[in-house]
Length: 242
Image (cartoon, rainbow, N blue to C red; front, side, top):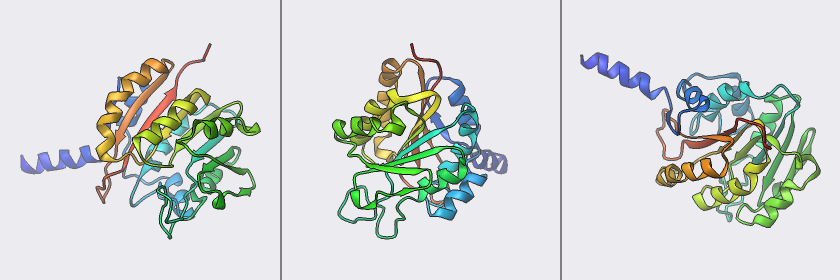
């Protein structure tokens, strides 16, 4: 009996804990094996992004849900390019590699336009199919300016908030940016601290009312490090806006 219970617990740990109103999104997320490495995991690791393995394993989730994206020319934007300026609260530390995830997205989605934004102006750059802009996610004016850029005025299919990891900052960017999520697209808030999970649980019903055409899920992932911020909020726009 002990071995059976241990094996069942081990199997359960391979699945994320998902909180949210029952939906196709929640069902899909609960079925993901977060320890199975994918092509996207390998690509993100190659560029030095922390999404693919080790501290986080978000790419196991992304590899599953992004298969459901509409078959069209995609627009992807990530807030948080990865500043390594130690004086900024959003710093990844001096070993951080600015732009790593953006380059990973570019390889994962060879026909997509990739955009990035960061509060650190010194790491902004332009490359083939990548354009980056300044944004302070606590300043609504700069968020509005971001969505006013020519390539973003029609919204995005994937929006990732990997910027300042506080609930207030996450809520600020979500409230101003979720209206720009295109039909069938995904909005993700990464690196939610364990201490903020209850705030998210309390706010998901509020967001469901504010954005009735979106499904929401709070996801707690397991990995070998069992660290404190391997958690994410995922929203999907499921129907056309009127």
